[in-house]
Length: 386
Ligand SMILES: [Zn+2]
Image 1 (cartoon, helix red, strand yellow):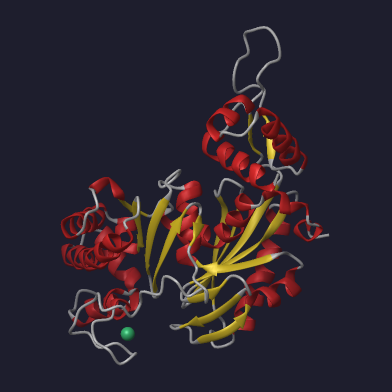
Image 2 (cartoon, rainbow, N blue to C red; image 1 turned 60 degrees about the horizontal axis):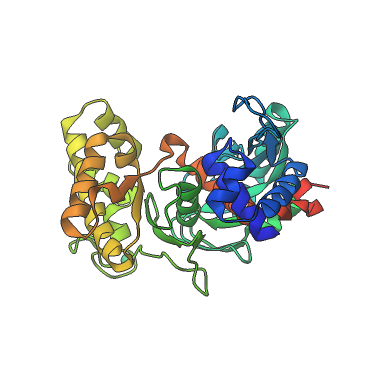
């Protein structure tokens, strides 16, 4: 029943509004199983009938289509980055309803950072969307995150170790809390809500202050026994002249991370402060030097992505990175580099589907992935905040 419900909800997400008969045909489930799942999902407020969507002009029982009910629930999300957290609320189609950035008062105090963010998010929910039931809270971060125990094991740029996020925030908010790496969460978000919709396998490379990868196959991200899969930060895929804080040279993160690339641009007098947002804003405003600098980064990222692509042979590669997110020239440079250096075809190389919402989507996708994987688990009273 649980698997059937997951298949039905996923089909409605991709095809809705859609008739039950079509769900049965495209999913391979029996009409009876589809009817049972639709009834259970409707009762939970996850599906809704939309009689007006398809005009009925026949005899017999009309095929009333069903769609995802986005009017009843929201998911809450907190993305923890180096200088700030992003708070978000999203509907069940992964659309961001609200996004807010809060700077860390004391980045060395994870408890303070997380509880401040959660308290603010609950306030915003009560203020703006009081009628929408929060299904749960997702927390996403870069680095090594263990979703089984809800722990940020290691976040290098923040210096956090073994932070028990789920236990802390469940106690604080009363909501079910799930925690995952933002690279894995975004990989699933691309499959569920993005341009990789319906693709079986996907490689995601996230380039921010932390550089992480994720590999998704058959609808689930590979985690590994220690949940450490996707740690590409110190692979020797970067510039061999760059010294990394780990002691080695040529590490990918030390070469292409936001901080590293902004520092390089600052050293070369392209920007007056070593801030990556300055570099991107200048490039968007038309500065040729800033634009060329970001194209260089897109190529460096592309060379690393090409190696990972040939190793894993996914259907698609998605790269999340500020320059390729904002500048078509960077996206083109990335695509050129990956296709020149690997077996990937041009249509297999995608940039993030989520634009400036990307960190908000990452956080909310941690909960939405769980919902679409096992929707009937929402029956658990804990999920309803009771
Ligand atoms: Zn290193």
